[in-house]
Amino acid sequence: MNHRSWSLLLALLLTGSVSALASGWYGTHATAAVSDPFAALRVSRVVGGSPIASFNLKELDGRTVHSKELAGKTILLNFWATWCGPCKEEMPSLARLQSQFDSTQFQVVTVTTDMHPQGIKQFLDHLGIRLPVLFDENEDVSRSFMVRGLPTTVLITQEGRAVGRAVGPRAWDSEESVALIRHVLDGMK
Image 1 (cartoon, rainbow, N blue to C red):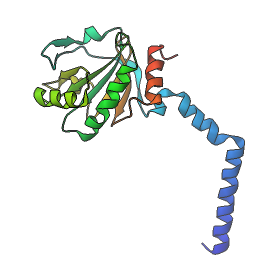
Image 2 (cartoon, one colour):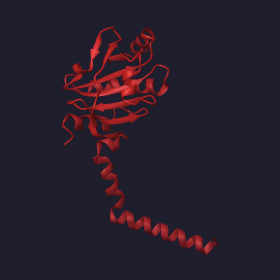
Image 3 (cartoon, rainbow, N blue to C red):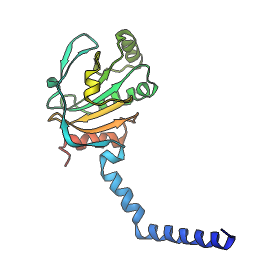
């Protein structure tokens, strides 16, 4: 392509960009993403709000937690491990998110296949984090939620339906996260 052709192509691109800005195209599309709390946080919607499979898992203190005990609350179920750097980095933001909501309505619950309770306890104590840690010893729950990478986080409604899924770390204490949780608590209206 010669110099004249490059100049013409550049002029056309600039004209198109200016026209798009003037017409509000960029603003309209940016607003659409912001108005969708799932998209704003890069959380994939789970089609149809799949009901979660029931489970029974041991907690860090040895108590068994039944999934039915979580019914009636919005749950952010986070799959993690102590050997996963991004998992450990996002853990404080999960605790800060929990602190912004009434635990009778919303609960962050963490699930791990790590079978080192003492190491997990030390890690959480060091950071001052008080979140439930459930042990998925046989990985049945991880399989039922199709966990393929860590961290994986699943958002569950008060009715026990998975509605969102995020693979990879997030800033769970961000404005976008709080907006997403409020959206689900309000029945996704």
